[in-house]
Image 1 (tube, rainbow, N blue to C red):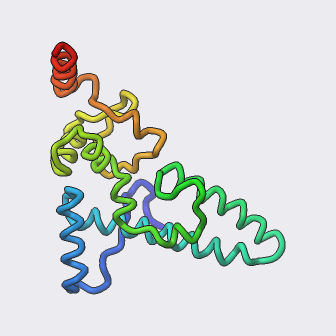
Image 2 (image 1 turned 90 degrees about the vertical axis):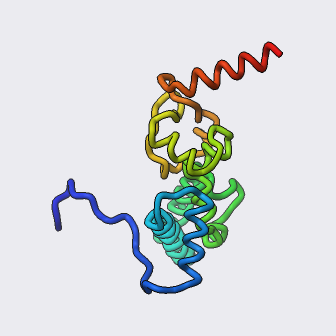
Length: 180
């Protein structure tokens, strides 16, 4: 066991260093979602791998008879609820739907992507810059982490930070359009 305050790696690197198809797919994801580097793709892939692993384990445990099976049903509901709050699956989804999730599904829930989709930024890279520089807030609280997974309950609460100069620019544009 190591020092508990020490940061640990939150991703797994690809097992093979050179695979042309994987490298080009990762480069396309970096370009599409305006990521800093491929490490961010690997982090999302690792998170998705953990979700799938947990779904497979729960699918196996549900088939058990007795207390273990009942506990697995309870844990399944908790797990699915967590994914529903994030917005990865719909409310009528099951564990089988978790196994069909793709990297793009989780990338679409990142704050950086949502800022771009909601029209606060001109591009995905611009959205990243707005988040990192502290111009974006969720429910009035500044968030400077572009990889923040945005729950569906907070999706409508995304806006400019009160102290941001972009907020005044956005407000004056709204006033000018309402006068016309």
